[in-house]
Image 1 (cartoon, rainbow, N blue to C red):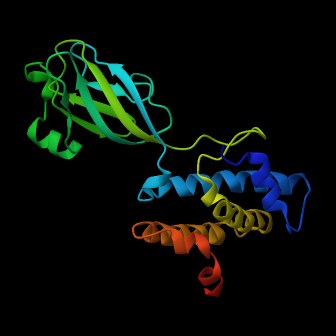
Image 2 (cartoon, helix red, strand yellow):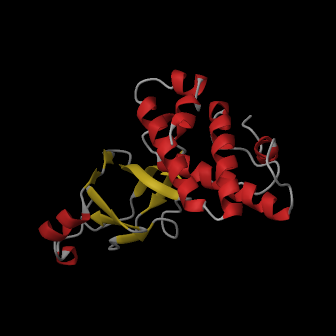
Length: 218
């Protein structure tokens, strides 16, 4: 089991200068802010929240909303899309939207068929060729973490990240209360960027002694 929201808050409040209602709100918001900031560093592959879902195309429909049509939940990045059938399943190839616009400026004029490409823009996915039948699509994607709200909600990350969340949330909560949020958020981002670079080699030194070098910075 991962660490609960209640336990993360308890640790942040150790040595915290205030415990009033405003401080509680600042601590709760800061924990969620740090968790989302960790999620933004997609290079930390061990911290990716991955989900897989199945959807179906609609005949002659090119564009699909990621949540309304394909039911992706808190979608962050799409990692792969596969067209699944009993005889010839394929992995759809991603093509940048600008290339689609250049190569197929008006895809509605093309013959419909079995999709082989996809592109994304905003909250939408487009398939090419435009489907000529109902096809089953399997989508693998990363998610933004859900907001921790209930006391029993659990951190989406492993225990080794608890002290990072607590340390940065404590600094950020103090900043919420004294009006220096943006400088604290920048410090948190810089620290986590260092964690991302370290994770490409080994996390052991970072987690064994995470803040010594950080405190030496001006």
